[in-house]
Amino acid sequence: MNIINKLIFGLCAFLSCGVALAAPINVSDAYIRETIPGTTISSAYMTIENTTDKQRKLVGVSSNISKRIELHEHSMANGMMQMQQVESIIIKAKENVVLQPHGYHIMIFNLDTPLRAEQQVELTLLFANGDTQSITVPVKGKKQLKHHHH
Image: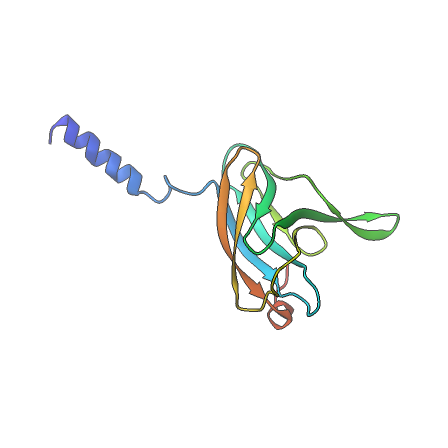
C-alpha cells in the first residue's frame, strides 16, 4: 500500500467510526402533551445533553404546527408557582438540562389543529451559535403520561 492509499484508508476508517460523528447535542425522553379539548396550547418536554466542551444556549424552537413557540420556566414567587417566558436555556458543557413539568419547558400556542396521542411532531431546536437540530417528538395523552415519572 502506498502512502496515498494508506491516507485514504485511514480517513475512511475514521469517518465510519460512530464516535467521530457523534452529535454535539443529544435529545432524549422527548414528548408533547396531547391538547385538552377546547384549548389551542400544549407543552413539550425532553432532556437535552450537550456532549461538547463548550456551553450551548437554546434560544428558540420552531415547528409547522405553530408560529408561536416559546421557552418557559416555572418558578416560585411570593409562595406561588408561576410560569414565565425565558430568552434562552443554557446547557453547560458535558451536562444536560431536563425540560419537565414545573421546570423549564416549551410552550406551544395557537395550534391550528388539536394534537392527539400517537401523533409525531417535528420540532427544530435553535441555538445561539446558529446551529439547528430537528427532532421528531411523539404526542402523549394522559394515559401514557400516568406511567411517566421524572
